[in-house]
Image (cartoon, rainbow, N blue to C red):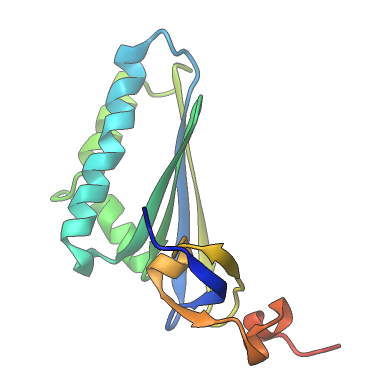
Length: 160
């Protein structure tokens, strides 16, 4: 288990970055032969990305809550994310093609993703009595003091 940081901290990342949420929903649990290969594909991709940091993945965390599986990913840029998704040498494209061939839109398994392009300094977060988490694992942690003590200061907004 990760060490708890017993104070308020916030995470910072240098430059722009991307938050990518991707998930699947098991619509027909009894059809395990349909959803099991989909569920198994993401760990293979995350292992591949962890072994090749130059591909641009900063951090990923998988969360399970039946019938949904969600992975929060932090990427260096949209260009890195798109290049990985389209690469014929990487695990994603063959998995995507296999999904479309085996399942497509038959309703057994739902898939989704959301992509957020984050501009430098246009985000805010705080963690208290937590181990490093989320953006704190993708970037670096700083004490939430001074200008970082309030959300307005962390996001760089001017007072009204």
